[in-house]
Length: 585
Image (cartoon, rainbow, N blue to C red):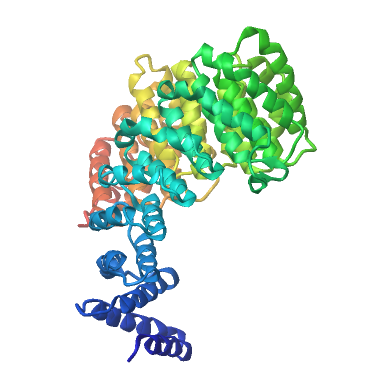
């Protein structure tokens, strides 16, 4: 049956079948496709049709089509027409990832297509490289891509620059030696090629500013040309000429000026002028303003211009952080404050009330960004206030955001006394998510307890844990909270002024409500330690522990044996037969 007819029959069968039968039809057709692709005499036209069908398997039904990876790679080279070759490359990009070993089979074909006389074949190869190139492929492909930088077609030159950018991301050591040859696109007569080159050189300037500083004048020239409206109208966006290229240039100049006074003096005036031009704009102007502020903050600030810039920043921030503004502008204002932390701390301090207002905003993204700023602003004198803000945020944050806040709290409390840190950590431990966040705090808490030689930290920990368990009104204590708090009470009960009876009754209350075997085992162990140290145990505690003898968990049974040994010599009016533990294996 011809493929086109077969495809229509397949679709018709799906349409007529019930939903539970469709999967069987799809799997049967997939098996047939696998057999057909295994034929040696299959024409490339039919292979292309099968690739299209396999794309449907992946995109619509999520089926595994790994059997057609090699066939897709072969189609990129054996295709009889440009259309079939395009289908082959599209299938390769869709089915294969840059970590697949089979991708090495594509290298020779890519090299051949990059040297083709057809611009369409070159473009297909370059597009595949921007999606799939990995570290192993970079050395073999870079020379051929460099040759395409001087191709007569603008699209080929532009895609060549983007392909080199991809190679730089996966194998920078391979691309950097060719740095001298990569300057040509910056002077390309086509603005699209020049804009693509800015993307590449932004990465170079970020990682190797010293190597790029000789090009400072070139970047300034490009920036001035854009600002003077020399680019075609097709690059305009909301009345601004090539705003994305402006932002790329500004970021590059910021990287080049960082730590270099000479370069800073050269670019600073231009950046300030751009900032003034766009401070009252909207849309893309906001991105340009942020890029200018961040670039100026990186540059070494001459003392003579600090006052003028501070006034400019103040005007901007008053506009963006006004309570009546929308959330996006407030977010932009907080981001600008973060950029100014090191260069203009006085400006940031003047907006403290605005920062606190942003903390109370219902938008979670703005709240998280503001918390990051509050953390960065923290000083020894403001530490209690900062911790209070972070603790408040913990109670409503998502578990993964809580992890970030926990790390911040741990870092902030490094200089505090150990007894203060343990109180803070335990307070945090109580409010955060049990499964995701509490394990992160277990190691810092236990480290503080182990390092305590005077017993003050241990005493504070026992009292805090006891209070939490005693005040617990819920049916169940969460696993990680209960396990740590019970362990602390059992391990360091001797450091506390609390009576043995109080501690044991608090543990028994958790035992009575708890259903988790791991937590139950930890409670029995802690009770046994307290009884061993105090040589006393209330009768009701003995009864409660003895009632667990029917549990079939082996670890619990072993803990019960230890408890029985600890209470064997304790005088009690309870019938000793109640203490006989029947081991259930």
